[in-house]
Each structure stands twice: as C-alpha cells, then as structure tokens.
Image (cartoon, rainbow, N blue to C red; front, side, top):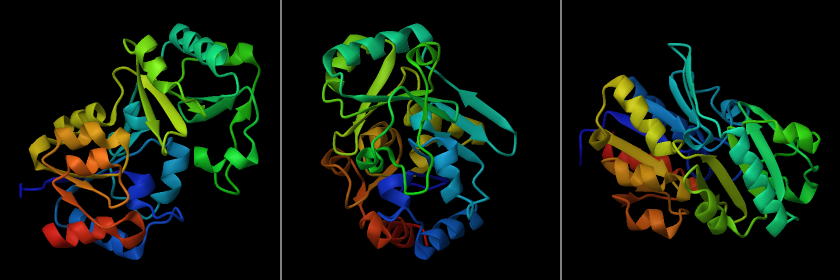
Length: 264
C-alpha cells in the first residue's frame, strides 16, 4: 500500500449514488481524508454547472477536472486550464456523423454553455445526465454550431464511435461511456489522466502516491497512471482487471468502504 497523499474521485457511478446524491458516509470519509492532509481532486466528465451542484458540501476541494480533462480549475489561485477542439475539426466530425448516422443527437459543450441543433427528447434526457428540473441544451441553428470551438462534443446514439476514432484520432480523444449509449469527444490532449498529472505537478504529489476511484472507460488512463486504483463494484470489467482493489458499488458507499479499509 503506497503512502497516499491525494485522492481522485469520479462523480457519476462512483461518488454519486444512482439517485445522484452523495451519501453521508461517503462525505464523512472524504472529509476525514482532507482533514488528515490528503489532497482531494474531483475528475468528472460533467461540465462545471452539472458538477458543482453536487459539491457544495465539499468547499475544501481546490482542483476540479471537468469535461474528462478539457477544463481544470483551481479555486485558490482563481486559475483555469481550458483545451477546446478546433472549429474546423469539429465541423468535419459533425459532417462525418451526420452522413453515417443522421439520427444521432449531437450537442456541443463550450466552456459551460451547451448547444444543439435538435431538441433532446424527454426519453433521452437521462442518457445525457439531465434530471427532471435540469436545463436542456440551447437549440441553435447549424451555422452557429459550425462557428464553435467546442470543449466537448456529445453524440447520443452514435454506434460508430470507433470509426470516429480511426478517422480523427490524430486530433481528438473519443470515449464511449454509459454502456455505449453516449460518445464523448475531446481534444487529443484532453484526458482525465493528463489533467490530473498536471494537478499533481502543481501540488507536488507523485502519481504513485495517489488513490483513484472510477467506474467507466474515461477512468482507464487514471487507473494505469496512479499507484492505487480502486474500481467500483459497478465498474466496467476493464477497470476491475487493472485495479488494485474492487470496492462496493456506488449505491453501497463504495468510496467510504475503501477509504475506511485502507486509510482510516
């Protein structure tokens, strides 16, 4: 067991239960780690507006990784590191998807604003993490979409995500999450592991002294990079296969269970 100096926490499927809440036990375990001097880093696919609502009880978290690493913020230094997809590349990706799967619902995240050309049906909201009273993406025309340099492109119902990776892999990272329902596309240099590595260099912690919790493909790079990766019981098998430990599920306080076992 390495000397843990930082903990990296994913949100959906990890720190958050299926009801999108943070349990009191998980909160207390994370707070005790912070009080003992361990850095707490949140690394999520969510944008700031959708992540920060869950983290009001964690004001002590200084570094936040959003959009799978395309945006990193530091509260104490009032600093952000933002990486977007060039406009011309996003235009090519848009055309590529529309020609092959025109029924795909495309939306663009642009530094915490959200746009789409087609309204998101109520039946598809859950797949995009939209809860009952959450705002949906703003519907704009295609010319406006084409003028954007997105932080992240979301493709809902796109089964050809491997083809996108083969075609545009020199420019973007393409990740399929949520059991293949949602494809997330970021700049090539944007990933959770690269963003967390940058944070670690800022706070002076080596990757070997980091415990990371995750459940899906966008956590895989972090699992290979850090010293003590912990997979949730509900995680994909690829994470479990390279984890140092498999804890309980996100609905059974899996984060707290592992922290209590190894750090308390």
